[in-house]
Length: 149
Image (tube, rainbow, N blue to C red):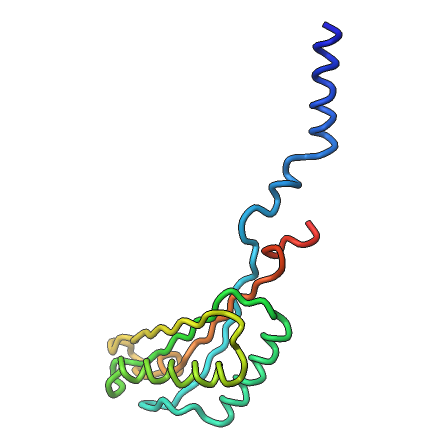
């Protein structure tokens, strides 16, 4: 009986001193939520204004400074169905924005380009939301953000 109790004490003491949760706490990615930036466009236009280019440059500088590790970058071009050739327009908006993003140095992760077309049934028609490009950056960090756990 004494040997049995002694053989139980060692594993129990080990579990109390080294809880299993500390080893399993950071299994899998713990990366930060994505950061987004929106670029405005005029109706039926894919030209990026100089003021928007300045805003993009400032945001990219902040992203690269705050998050030098980046998992992915997505550029999503939008257009309204009531705009001229909306599929082509959304693609051109996304492409122009991606070019500025790359030229300004947001190149720490793969870039994916997507488009979305808003339905014409919207009562507002072509709104600022339907004429924008969203830039999304997924910031990463060392050790899947588990440092210090």
